[in-house]
Length: 622
Image (tube, rainbow, N blue to C red; front, side):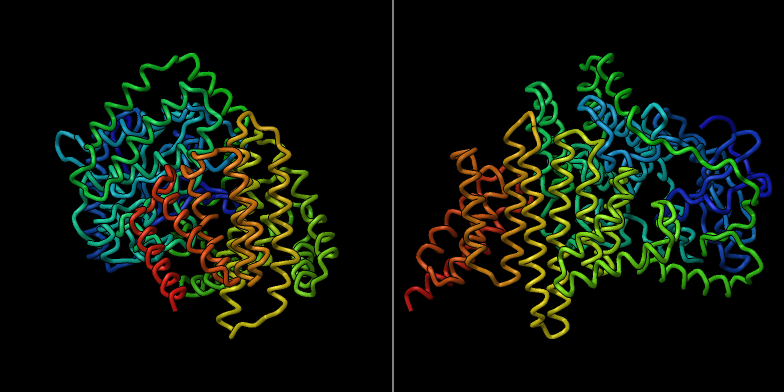
């Protein structure tokens, strides 16, 4: 951070009221504006709506915190210019970074992020965290480390942001709801250490940041979020479970021997840093030293080449220059620029808009894809009705109309985001539509990225299928149409994806087999939900044979093999083949014990299977 921090007149920062928000979180909304000296700036906005005494106390506390931030001058810390306050709130005025954030980079599979670039990202991020941990006048703990809070310059250098956020959130939440989530939550569940989850509101410790950094390493290596939406994270993490490492193994299968060694060094640090016992985690200073040593050994020319290659396919955001609305008109609470509404009226209107947005496609999306709003919504409705009526050919025709528009733009992430949005809102047939479309938007991906994207879409379809069945149970169950939809539409869809993966030419055939095996696992799980145990047995057996043929005795190193063995045993029980079921359940137990990429505590899985095995053996004796 260069120069003195100062207060900025909100009237001198102008925004485009139609294109302004670039992020949101527990800290508040992040919007972009223009200033006559700094050009584009990012403003982290907080809702300050308590009484005047409360406001003054909060402002004093925030100003003290800002003075601390001023001392944090470091290449890997986001640059803060100062602050601004206005009628509706307060905001930190920061440098705007056009590279976006690390999460956006990692989830954009059109971008080739090489091994050396990943090491540089981790090395720079660790350096920034260690710096704030060791400030001479007051040691800080970040408290909310995650890829979203690692900003990127145009040249993909890392800048840690929000390390004062946890403290500022604590201060503002005493008098107000934090704009963005309304809870005052000071951390992100997916990246929170188990002891922090158990002691909500306890003192922040540097070991918490070490744990969070381990989850960042996981996402940098796997390029997928550590947990899926809907996962029971709280109980899982407290009980010692960690994210699956299957995606990391798939990625490593396409690396050179030297690159594999580097990846394994990262994995070792990751596993040490997310240890259940905080006393056993390395200090971030140690993590940083190891990362700097690894990075310094690398050929910097090759690092530069990997950066350039990533930049070629990145879509760096250029903010709108149509800025005319003053920052002073922005309401952090409502997330809108105020017009003629009073604040209570505006709150009601925005709440209704948010509700509508959660169940409908935004107008901007349909316009972007070349449809009118009515036409786009009508097409999705048509698709759903055709599937419900078991008119699958007609549903395919509607899907083709929508996907044609998206394929013209190769809008991979747009389709995926819509699928996730629909699934989270329990609109599962709509979600299946967009997972299918997302699996087709792969023209700009590398072969391994394309195959991995198809597999992830197959996972999404399976999860949507589970959601349909759960909703049916809540509505007393017995919906024959759902069963038919699973067997005649969902299962063929995933089978088609498995065949597409099979037809992609990959450098490493091991990755191809693993991805196909996962698709077979998703298929047999859908068959289980539909109660078709005969077909489930066939699919499990196909997957088991596929893995054994490719990997031989090493098949047990992969968790998908254990899943297939386990579920084969379940299907055998359902078809009254008790002895064979016991045999395969024992094989599954051994496979879970030997799998290298099963990150949940193996003892838990084994205990569950031992209990089931005992039940089967008792049933056989009776």
